[in-house]
Image 1: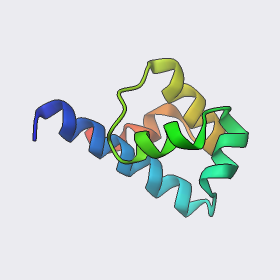
Image 2 (image 1 turned 180 degrees about the horizontal axis):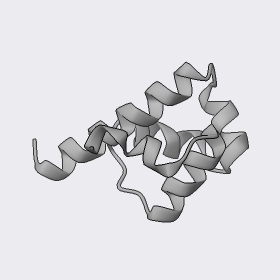
Image 3 (image 1 turned 60 degrees about the vertical axis):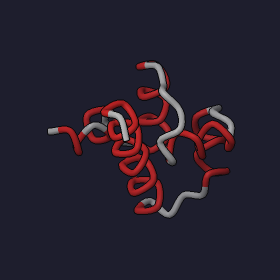
Image 4 (image 1 turned 180 degrees about the vertical axis):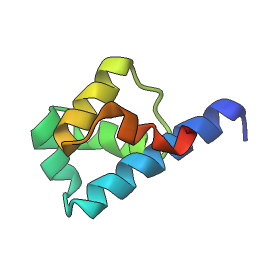
Amino acid sequence: MTEKEKILKKFGASVKQIRKSKKMTMLDLEVATGISEGSLSKIENGKKNLALTTVVKLAEGLAVSPSKLLHPFD
């Protein structure tokens, strides 16, 4: 596994853990962010490299700070 793949998987796991802790479905998060369920699935599974603007949208949709999503990298 490449370093990029490891980073994407770690970030995706963080998004998924926060989403589940808030008892949100992917559909809930899609409605809150405007990001399609398919894209959310790719993000959570570490299959999609995303833009900073998408990180901010995810954070807003999950009602957390962007730094909370990046916490695994501290």
